[in-house]
Each structure stands twice: as C-alpha cells, then as structure tokens.
Image (tube, rainbow, N blue to C red):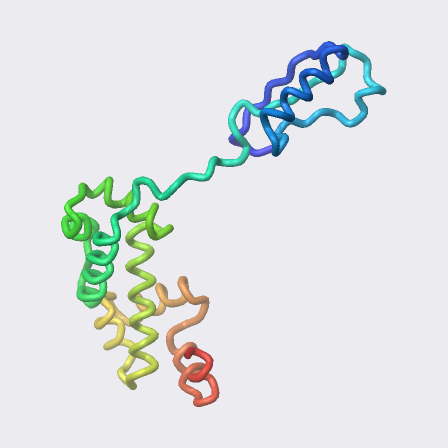
Amino acid sequence: MSATAAVVARQINPLDMSTIYADLAGLYPENPFSIDAKITERQPAQLRLVEPVASVRPEKQGTTGGLAPWQVKKVKLYIEARIGHGIPLDELAQQVRLSTSYFSAAFKATFGVPPHSYVVSCRVEYAKQRMLTTNAPLCEIALDCGLADQSHLSRVFRRVTGTTPSAWRRYFSRPDRAVALQ
C-alpha cells in the first residue's frame, strides 16, 4: 500500500457483508476496497474490511493553474532570445505579469518541469544545434549557451543526455549519423 494511503480496519458483521460490499461496489466502480478472498473460512470476529482513507490514486486534475497560451509563447520566445545570458526566474515571471511563486507553479503545471530544468534543456538543445552546424570549440558553444565554461557545459550536457558533448559531437558528425537526427 502506498505511503499516502491511510488504512482503517473495522469489524464487520458477516450478515451485513453482502449489503456493504454491494453498496461499495456501486460507489466505487474501480473497487479500491479489498476484502479477504477467504471470507467463508474466517470467523466473524476476524472478518475485516480495509478501506483507504485517502485515495490511493491521485485524482486527475485539469490544466487549471497553468499558463495561458499567450504566456507560453512569450516565455518561450524570451528564453530563446536570451539563451546566451542568465535568465532569472523573476525576469521570466515579469514577462507574463505574474508573481515569481505563482509563475513557478503555473510553469510546472504547463510544461511538466520547473522553469530552471526547462531552461537547462533549452541550453542543451541549443548546444546540440551549434555542434551540428558549426565547428566552433566547445568552450565557445558553452558561452553562447549561457553557461560559465566548457566544464559547466559538459556537466549539464551529460546530466541531460547521458553523454559528453565531445562524444555526442563525434557520434553525430559522421555522415551516416547526421541523417538519424532529422
């Protein structure tokens, strides 16, 4: 059972069991209640119904609390335009006229990741594009991506892709591999 589900066990009169089970089955079609399969072999004092107090499965939430389409577009354009510079969270929030804390929550609800993770992934994608289209050294690409230096690029790139920038560049610079990206 998950750590978020609290369990309450109560004594059930065996005569009421069929009525209770029928009521529960009607209320909960997915049947989150579990009843011991060996009901007939147990004594009435040992018969227990186990029910979760909190739902085991989180309820599906709509996209409420996310960013509006115009805000998504504005944030993406701002990140793209300033990819080579620092992009503080408060600047992103100011672009869409939201408080920093509300923006963070709305951004995560919309994109599925926190703003910093999204910006880092954009920087890595930009670095990939630069490595494919230019012969610029990795230290220059790192600075163009808004990262401190080549080692910073290597750490971030490896965390996101699982390989180093130089190994990635060698692999995709071969003519037979370049087609795989498109």
